[in-house]
Length: 317
Image (cartoon, rainbow, N blue to C red; front, side):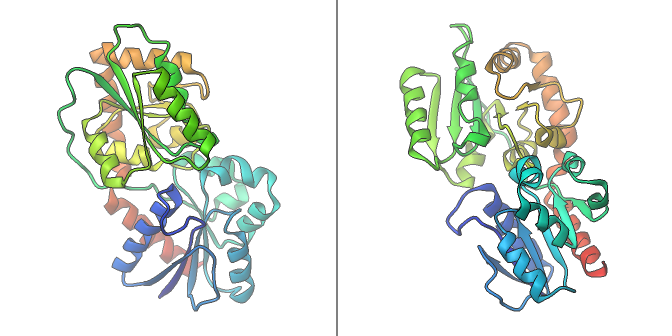
């Protein structure tokens, strides 16, 4: 089967949509399908379209639906889709109607959709290969932030929290992610100049992200909106505990009863959670246990199986 996989992220991008598209294309090819990844549909022959991002991929979705009204059209909803665009953007809402199947990347995402749309919606968790944790630096308590520097990620919340920690705290923050705009890069450099506890390494490879995660004590996921963060999947795959903003996308990944949420955009409770994780072994152990219980969600085998079922359902719809 020929599959057109549409993503608005360019081939050189390390943003989440591109990572998802490339991982899914690998899975689909393993199933025996021919896959073409494009930023926009160029009209090539395709038995099925899988489009990431309801708003930004809408022109491709519209053209494919018009050209092939009886062929499966799967639309994968991102964080900005779910928690902003489908509530205020006409193109995003039209994509929901044109889709024969919808996909959300964590269980809470379904709740953003009207009941009539939930019937054609599947949950497919993003996966990551398991990796072994490395011995951490005994001199510091290293905390990792993985996310590009843009408004939705609230990228500097963790460094703001470190400024509230006591002098004797051993917490050090390493931040991985590129800056779309120079203003964010300038802010990161300014924070590094002002706070020796914070290092911004910029955009790095996925291999480097996993290498740093393997030695870190904690991942902070600070976003204002997420569809289903790849960074959390990576942390779960490696057994790295997470502290996260209390937003639906993170709750859908970590569960309602996860004990290390803080109100999005508020560094004071985040600082308290960081300090507790550093100084309370029982609390840190609880986070490890809770993340281990959710680690199966990041299984590549489960994502592969979910994609196979999705295609079968789409073709039978």
